[in-house]
Amino acid sequence: MPKKPIYTSPQEAESAFYEALERGDLDAMMAVWSEDEEIVCILPGSARLAGYAMVREGWRQIFGSGNRLKVQLLALSTVHAPFFAVHSLVEQIAVVGEKHLAAPVAATNVYVRGAQGWRMIMHHASPVPPSSIGDAPHVLH
Amino acid sequence: MPKKPIYTSPQEAESAFYEALERGDLDAMMAVWSEDEEIVCILPGSARLAGYAMVREGWRQIFGSGNRLKVQLLALSTVHAPFFAVHSLVEQIAVVGEKHLAAPVAATNVYVRGAQGWRMIMHHASPVPPSSIGDAPHVLH
Image 1 (cartoon, each protein chain N blue to C red):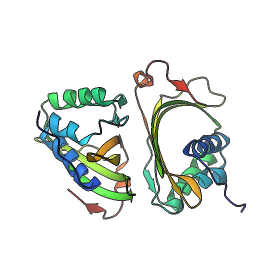
Image 2: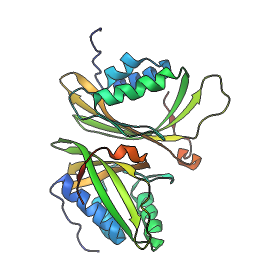
Image 3: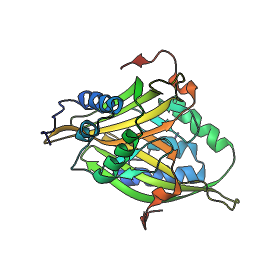
């Protein structure tokens, strides 16, 4: 397996996360996650996944469905400190080839900075009413 | 309004959060939240609330319903650093006087340490399947 990339900012790790999600690339997805901390991934309607092996298995199953996803992100707020960052976003996810957008999903992404650069330790995503998109948020992606 | 308490650990802030939730005490609830950061509160089935005023209004409406809640917490994992903490829990919430437990809710609580001690900056809660409770987690509360 190739050496994992080093992300020099939370934003870089976040971009890699959503690119891996759109490409359905399991290795790229798992490169974003910390191997040193107790990671947790909570996706809409799914069980809570904790630990590297369980999170990997969850993404393997999602990517195995063969659906290609297109994600539009609205960045809503961020809290940054030298060694951690919390990003709060709204994701609008569409399955490529289907016309309708899924309901918006609020995502909480937490990153920590370790010896290997910034890594994700938490992705918590859950559906929110469309009113949560608010007025003219900044479209990131 | 009385001076706000200073929480000397994330656990202390978290206990105050769930005690305020059970008591339906709006001032105690809002004392837990940071006034210095962009706070976000996401509750099951509700809109994403951002900023102190909006979060306060959300809790005011919840507490205004008059339902008294009883929360059982399962602590699942925590990541602590000198100035921030991420707690991942499962909440089992019952309305006092009703027999059934609501579906379990996965909660991500993020705390930061500032001049006024530890405060909550993020509460993201969403329903998860009962299988997420796992085997024999530590009951906290």
